[in-house]
Length: 173
Image (spheres, rainbow, N blue to C red):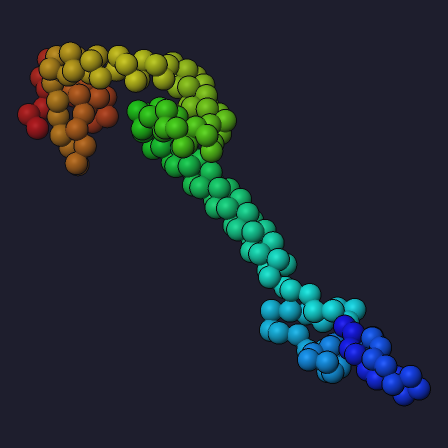
């Protein structure tokens, strides 16, 4: 800043620059003081507000990325849980969910592919489990004799194989 001072020789007003570290205020040089959201830099007060706004935006972006990653991990863990507990229909439905497909579509597809591969190794395709198994069980269930032993329900053939006996004279339990 500049102030008007009287020249001692000519008695005229002249503009004079304030010394370093001072600023002009009402015609006098006063020490440079900055307000709270400002920072003194090279004899100027620089506002910290843009810096704080940029930092807040960067923190929000970092938190959003972390939240997205955590949600993806949660969806993948849910898919793995469904696969591990043979919840095939829920796993298949999860793959159809828009949010899950956007966040973890590739990982869910890999879990479904692994489940499909494992079921085919066992001699049963996932498509069969999802579409035909229920109807097959419904039609064949009444055709079997059932026995209960130690909290387990077995077909008569399974019971005889595990505990002995013959089909001609089945046990009464």
